[in-house]
Length: 309
Image (cartoon, rainbow, N blue to C red; front, side):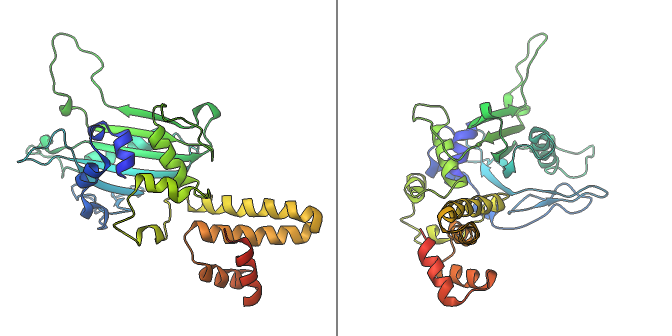
């Protein structure tokens, strides 16, 4: 999260990733709470909080957390940013992602206040950021691009000196990937962000851990790299990619060995690659292949040893 915030949220651009990690409220990404029906003032904490309003459709957030706003905070006052991080399989789900992002921002902003009365203190409102990472169905010319949308004072008649923090309350960031290979150079704007996200969203390359180690310090947490990670909204897409990759390789082999045998090998190979992508052990893969394809343990072990990278 620190890598993404450093590259997309201007409040953190001048700070190191380690400093940004210190700004993120750890408790806000571990507890799970939802906004209760008929109320809008419950704090949004945890992963997958929900907005629930009477007679309204439930809106789910992929990941929501709070982080200290270093620009507006001081020793006596802590002002937070409310951040929503959304991972999307497709940029074209049947409606404009940008409109959905603005809707999420509006709900996040309104949730900070209770029922509006004559005593409502609007000074309590804190800035909300919604960051969307889209992996597929990106127009060719927009591959590896970022769009920023925010509230701005666009016109004044007469003298106007309203502080920016009085209206700078919503920011939408839409990140578009689009293909498995990123060919940008270090001199290109957004290079660090795109290189990092490319490695995460297309984790089938041999240099995955090498790239990740440039952004994440694994030395203090030996278990971190072993964790089974499920990318929000992208697990199925990544699984299908590994599955199809294995099928295609199997079909190529099948040209010489027999089409039917090649397809069967491709399916098994794709399944094994998918298990590996999600951090499963070889033992887990053997059990899964044995169960799903109704083969003996001996054959399952042979398959895994043959196709495991």
